[in-house]
Image 1 (cartoon, rainbow over the protein chains, first blue to last red):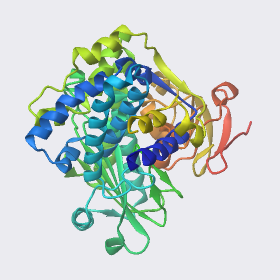
Image 2: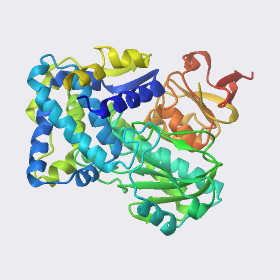
Image 3: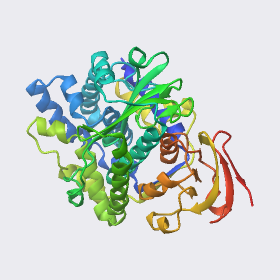
Image 4: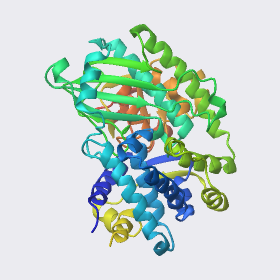
Length: 358
Length: 101
């Protein structure tokens, strides 16, 4: 029987691509990189799945070991793409089902509803939301503070973009919500949480060892304008302008809420670092960019591997095909097929996911 | 494509990378093929952002909405049609870029 997540996945992924295209990404062609691995990613993750199964790690615990919910959903996206491109699928059918079923269990345990984010990205319980609404030192009805928080958003997002580039920015950039905020802020108000974790990945980039910040969170109360997002939560959309319709804002950096007069200053400091770090990737040779891609690929799971007492770093099985194949820098997608073609064509992954469960 | 609401007028600056910061002033209109992290300082100074490529959830569109500045994406030709110093009006609600000179 085909699991229900495939249909939700298909609608979610199609929606996300329609929103992004036409586009050009300048980093290594990640689709070709995953294609080259021909099942090696499943072998890599199967060791992790078996170990955590032996340890009895609960799926809700595993969910929290992912940097963001979108990182987990992106894992499906990358694995599904790789599976679709495996030449001899018979060898990998059991393995692939094991991994997809395991990941689906983790995603189901962590998401409160709408786990494929057709509109909402909800992971915080009502108690956690109530605590945030009550305990946060809100800056209310202050347009300048909201604009400064916007600069903080762009600065932190740029660090994530610079250090994880086009295929893995969800490691360091996520938007959660909308959560009902009416009990604290009145009718038609919602809370959105913009989270930037893993901003200082020294394991990937020793050059960032002196970056002064590791994590930024922006809490925003919207009034009369509605937020929604997509598969990759940072793909946020509003039904009106969010800045003038923000009733309250708070910015937390490394556990400390910033006073109003510090937000712009810290945002500019982060922006200057982002400018500097944006050149790190640009300076890489093609060989180094391939290595970096596979490091990013496995770093998504670093905390899961560490919790299992295992090494998260790339194996030869993952590295060798990427290094051996002709994988160019840059990828352009000018159009995307209509939904019916996307789910039925052998060119795309949904056909092969359905085939996997026949 | 209209990606972030609002109207802004200003001087066009075609931006390729971080070195363009030397010519970029507060209130300029940032015009690029796509936006990149190297442009972050200019994005925080821009009165509006215009790109050749992109949809509603590409980088330029997302950050413009968070900054509260108008944005038009997917023009296909902004970087070739517009030139540095041209004055334009960007209507991020209508998805238009009007040359004023």
